[in-house]
Length: 516
Image: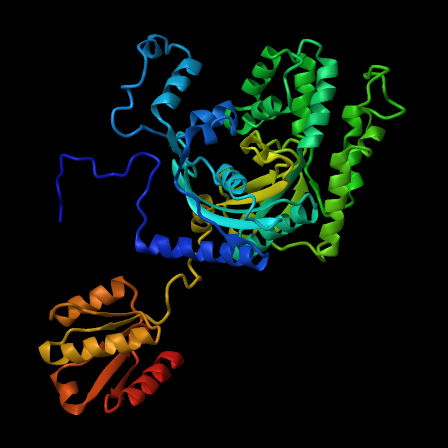
C-alpha cells in the first residue's frame, strides 16, 4: 500500500531504523561479546546519553571536538548572551565558543570519557581495580558513508586502577576470543605511544624548525588522519609544521614498514628499526649527542612493555606454533590512535582481507572494527590523579556489516528455535487457545495467538513471514474431542495432542518440540 506524506519519513542521515531480523542478529553479536566480558570479570555499567559539554570537549583532539553533537539548551538559550557574543564568529574557535555557550550539554562521543567522569565522581565507593563493561550507543557528527554512522553502538571493557600489563594482554586475547567465535578474520594491530614519542623526538632532532611545543598528541592527531585524507596531505601538513621534507619522506617509509607477527620473537621487529635509528656501525646520520640509536631502544619503556606482553601471550598458551585460526596479532609501527588520552600500548582491529579471500572468497572494504589502549592518567582531568587505566571497544555496527557481507549469519540461529503460533479457527477454539498460550509462555516458549479468524492461507503466510516453527490448531472438531493438532511448519510433520489434563498436554507438547 503506497502512502504519500508531505514529511520526510526517512531517518536523518547517518541514523537508522532496525527491524526485528536485524535486531536479532545484533543481539547475537552483543551476547557473545557480553559473555566474554563477564568471563573476564567485568561488571556492567550504564551512563546517560547526555554529558555536560565541558566534560567532553578537549579530550578527543581538535578533529574529534568538531564531531560532538551539542544539544541546544532548553528554553531560550540566547537570553543570557551578551551582544558582543554574536559580533565575531568568523573563526572556527569563536564559533566553537559560541556553540558551547548555547549548548551546555552534548551527546556522548564515546564511552571512555563518561567512564572517567563516573569513576572520579564515585571514587570513594569503588573497589579498585574497577572492571566495567558498557554496551550503549554513541553519537558523532561525522560524514555518513559505508561503515560510518552518526549513531552507533559501542561495546567497551575498561580496567581502572591497575598498571599491570597482564591486563593489556588479557584485553588483546579478549578481542581474539570474540572474533574467533564470530569467525571474522582480523588483524589485531598493537603499538606503543612511547615508541611514537621516541620517533617524534628523533624527527625533531633532524628538523630544527619544528616548534618546541609540538608534542606527541599533536603528532598522533596528524598521522592518524593518513587513512582518511591520504599520506600526501599529511606530508604537506607536517612540512607546514616545520618538519624537514626528507624527514617526512623517512616518516612515510617508517609508517609503511612490514607488520611483524607479535607471537614471533620480538627482536625480529626491533632489528627492522636499525635502518631508521642506526647502530654502532652506522651512525653517520646522528648527531654526537643523539640518543636515538638501535642499541638504546632496548632500554626504553615501550620495549620492556612489549617484551612483557609477549611473555604473557606465551603463558596463555598462545605462540607462533599455536596461533589463532582467524586472528593475527602484529606490531604496527605506524599505529597512532588519534585520541588525546592514550599514553601507553594502543591497539586496533581491522578485517584481514587476505584470510577473507581464502576462507570466504570475498574481501571487505571497512575501517577499524575495534580499538583501544592504555590511558594512565585519564581521571586526573576530573580531579582524581594517578589512576592507571586501559580499555578496548568493539564497533558493533561495523562488525554486523562485516558478518553480513561474509554471509556469516546464514547458519547462525539468531532467533528462538521453538516459536509457536496458535491459529484462529473460530470463537469455539479461541478461548482454549488463549489459555494454552499462557501455559506455554510460563514454560518459556514464545507464543502468539492469531487475533482474528481468517483464511488459513493468510494465517500460514503470516506464520512463515515471522519464521514461526510450530503451529497449533484448535477448532470445533478438536474441542469436541478434547485435543489439539500441532504441526512443524518446516518439516510439515504433525501430531494430535490430548487436552484431557494440562500435565499430559505439556508432556506431549515438549516431546514433539524436542524431537523436531
